[in-house]
Image (cartoon, rainbow, N blue to C red):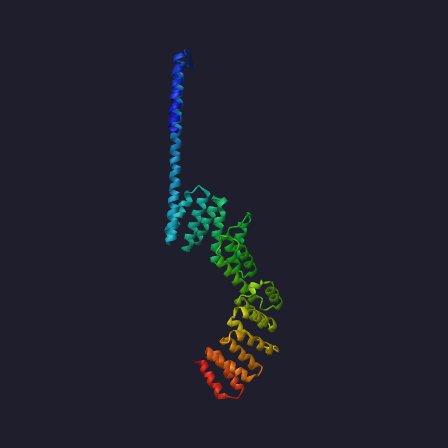
Length: 384
């Protein structure tokens, strides 16, 4: 259609020129002292059109040559970048660095500059060439400041791999300075930096944000949050007030997590707060039936042991063949010097699941009863 319109326009112009030449009798005098040239008006118009057409074709030719050079440059940039990416994912880091570095030199589009620099930098990093790695990123930031976020994320990753979490956090702050919604990749790097800094409260805040993002691995975020809670409980195990405050602020669902409950129970036992430790166990065991919690129930014993025995015997009605529960009851009864019940529970535990701890508990019981031969027998069985 475009060609047809051009042909119609040229045909109309030719007709117009022909008619003008036929009915025009004027002349044009061209003077350039000491020369002068007299031309008929129709010849002048035809010559003017010819000059314009020649000038137009010359301009098109020059633009074509320049455009060819640009297209060739862009094509080479694309080829170098793609082959660099291919080599990077194949593990050929030397070739990846070389091709990406070439693409970085040729690129005149900001996004291409940034991508080329990051591939070259990551390849150099794999080869241990840290100086070249950092220079690629600096070049890209200077050449394409509008796309510096990609380079800053790569720089942060390198710093974290080197264990420089403080410098990594400073780099992220320069990225956050531009404002707006921060990419999930940057938040994940900040989370890693806060983990290295053992700043568990910050890790928990970041997991809350990442859990709402569609682009994140929800299972991984949940695990990272769980790990941070475990570390937070351990870090507060030397301060009863801090531990109380942290545990009370956890959600009921989180308190029902057996691993978190075990960590909190151990922390309270270490601080000598048996009442809170027992309360955590008593709230969790009927739901989780976690053997580690049941075992801890026989730790940190005080004047409430009789009540503990009653509680454990209620649990036993639901799980009569729970070896760990039987062992715990045996230990509790031993503490209260209920020798007959203690022996029955410990022997029942051994009959369900023979184990070293039950043998040692029976050995200690028999020692207290003066039955040294039986005690020695259980010690030997416990060691075998």
